Length: 379
Length: 119
Image (cartoon, rainbow over all chains, first blue to last red; front, side, top):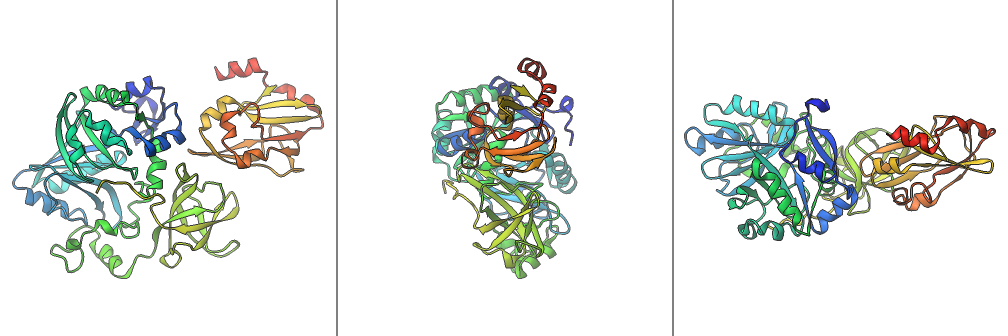
């Protein structure tokens, strides 16, 4: 991944970010807005109260077009993920994960059944590797077609539906994880009712030539404000969602990450299509007997945020290091520091007190349920 | 008023110097959510990390600009860290230091020099 500013890539909304006064930072090889003049705290709270518009065009949008029937493509994908692909209805989206031979996570993603093809949205930092992975393993059953001429926007928050309905009235009929194609004044929009903030909202793929006009039209609506990567991170942390490369890595299995819900019954022991994905032995064993460590929510007792890398201990002095924080910061909606980390299952009970070591001092933290803030998806 | 290259301001009040961070620094930090202040009567050396400031985005330090003794800290920041963003060059001072010799402050930038430094 290059972080050299001269080599940074730009999304179709780059000029818009600059004109809005964004502070730009290198992220996954792109020059991206970390915040706008509103600032991270107010951007976060605005999204929870109204609607926030995010540029997520750096993420990969990949069309998988079957060479034969969809069934062969679905089977091919099930050989790469511990997730049921077959059985996902047309116009529906699902959360998925690529695993490696030891059961670790190579990337997490969304995939949607769009009738005659599957649309996958993958993390920016992983997209090259993911596309290569798909091309290697699916060459016989599908064309792997990275979409390079579309921007991807996320519109999140309680007023997202009303805002988007100005351009695509059909979104009012969508439920969480539905996908549609809507013709609009800004071309053909590929819309899913999903996101990564814990809020009801949408992700909208728009032709790149129409992206800035569409974004500006959304921002004309009073409830909609542009939101940068800073608030995107605090929103997803409050929602208890994993950040790839931090809370989820090739060394961490989906079961350890608390993502067993993403592994449908059909892929588990005794299921119709049990196993048959990379790392199945490890993952199925962990589903049976429990993992050696598990992701938990943590609330520092004081005001000091505990960030990624903070070591976790079972005693205020001496004792044993039992884990570490993988994501942490301040939750603007909770008005308190929050974190997630990995600990042994015996210490993972909500209410359990642990200690995080901050600048040489052990400070108490309490294990808590995830998410920190209930999600408001429109089920 | 004097300014350091670390974006602190230094205001002389009798034989003590009041230390805070500049508007520029506060803006760069973003929303401040936590401040850890030094202990009163601590003897500190130039360059020592004496305060921790955490914004929504990241943690950073305030360094002691000179050798001296911490004689007062601004407890208001502990309860209301956001004051750093609201009034960085006024109410949101961090600590006061007593120096043996105030002339050491002459090495720091004047307001005009600091403006040039910011470019």
